Every structure is written in structure tokens, then in C-alpha cells.
Length: 404
Image (cartoon, rainbow, N blue to C red):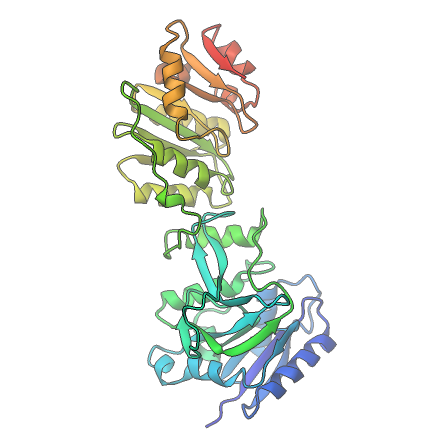
């Protein structure tokens, strides 16, 4: 039996004519597969979230399968048949149905074979397009991947309903990746089918510029729940052993909404820790995934990383120092100085100046300070947050060694 496939066509501009043209071209290129065209967003303004448009169109659809399509896509002949097979054929049906996506080609000829989830910039969980590496040359069948894009995606209508539809909390993208991750978590196959080719005039890879509310939502929702490719090599970073005589340190990093900067700083510091050091990540009420990343790092390194929470950056700095258990400490900042040799150099410089109780370095991210924890606790938390170390210098009563 030839199933009816509902082609849900989304136009970024909300143009019914644009969607109708794309739907007609997709239906013609589908060949013998029975299709109907449903405009996703027919009654919505151009600013309507795409996830809401998909859900509304799915409620109007009559097909046993739905195909999500972008109006700026062009479909090569025969594009739909292999997707139907991958999403609803015997292998997929045995797992309750699946999601299948086309191989996407952009205007420059670059190829995206589904999406990977990477531990990489700009967010600790970043979606990257899986480029054609040639490793699967000649393969036309389905290849399971973490996610595929809604420029050309097919799944059973019943599966879409069972997953609760698209998360309408996503405003302008990544709702397709979120749906795929929920499907994969529930045991359904998510595959890219290299024998189905679609040319997508828009970007094949999701946006990577920040701050991006959709990327923040995805990162917060899925950090720690899915495996991540270490694309930037952050977790492979290693540092040499600490210098002999360096005192055990509690490194305190107060942060609030620092998901773009904290992972890089945190990994450098974690790699520089000695066997007797600890890293205290103090979150000041983040809403962008900072706390989720910190908790993920703490799960990876429970013996050396702890997370404390507070309301605001000043309170976070105070809470982090209160939680410190080593005799010496440092207050550092996401995006601030964190070179591998900083811990050795700063502590040695302070040890050579017995008349000083704290060493301070100014930076745009805030004042970085080293010293015995009991002295750091006496300083006003606000003095660590200023770019100019003058406030800390004044609070230390002439016992600060300041490097500007």
C-alpha cells in the first residue's frame, strides 16, 4: 500500500505562494509517492515560531507520514521514496517508526549528512553539520545520526504525536534537533539517507552566533543527557605537574550567564589542577546553561570539581570562597586570565613577597586574585568583579601586590 505523505512546507516569510511552489516541486520530484501539500504557517504572521507552525500544519495533515520541508529547498528526483522506507519500513517499524532526513547541499556545494552534537564553541553543547568526509562514499542507505534537519525530514504522523510534537519554546530554530534527540532517547532511529538529495538555499548547519536563545535552550535541555563529540579538543587538554612547593589551591570561579566563556576557562583550569587542588564553580543564578555545564563537569570530575549556587555574582563569589577547603585560593573569571602557567607564576610571585597578602591582576572579565583563603574572604566580593584592581587594592589596606 502506498502511504499518503503530507508535505508540510514552511516559508520563512510566511508566503503561501512560495510554499505552494516549493510543495509542487517536491511533490513532482517525489514521483509515484502519494502526497498532499500543507502550508506550515498559512494563518500565521512571519514572526510566528517555526515549531508552532509545524505543529499547526501537522494537525491539518491527513497523511500517515509527514515530511517537513523548507520553501527555499529544491528536491532532486526520487528524494522521498528512500526517506519513507527509512522512517517507516520494516527496520524502522520494528522500533516504533523513525525519523529520516535527506543529504543537504547548500548553495556552495557543501554537504551536510545530518547533525552532530559537539562539546565545542560557542556553547558547551553546539550543533554542527556532519560534513561529507568520503568515508561513506557510495553508501546510499540510512546512516543513524543524532539529528537531521527540517529542511527535509520525514517521520510517521503517529510518532510526531507520540513525541508531543515540536517544543514551541524554540523561537527560530533547533526545534528539529530537539525532536530528533527526544526520538532517539525513546529508542526510535534517526537517520540521514544519502540517496535522498535536497538543495537548501539557506544554511545547512544551524546558527552558531550567540547569544542565541534557541541554542541556550537546547544546551540547557540536553547537556549531560547525550554524548558529545569533543570537536575543539577541550577535554583532551593536559597541563604539566604543578611546580614544587605550590600550595594546595581552591580555584573559585563566580559566573552568571557565562555559557559562552566558562567552558574554555574551566577546562584550562581543570587541566592545570594539581593532585591536591580543587575547582569551585559558583553560579550566580544563570539562565543560559552555565549551571548545567558546571554540573556536567562536576559529574565528570567529582573528586576535584564542586558546584555552589547563589543569587547574583557578588553572592556567588562569597559562596565560592566560603566553600573553599584549601589553605590558599584564587578567584578567577570566565574569559579572564587562565593560562596553564598562571597558577604556578602567581603563587610563586606572592610567596616571594611575604609582606603581601593577596596578588591581584586586572582584566576586562574582573579582578583575578590569589592568596590565603582567609584573606580573600575578608575582601568585599564586589572588589573581585571590577575590571580595575584598584577596589581590591584599597580593600586590602596596602597589602595587595597588584599587577596592571
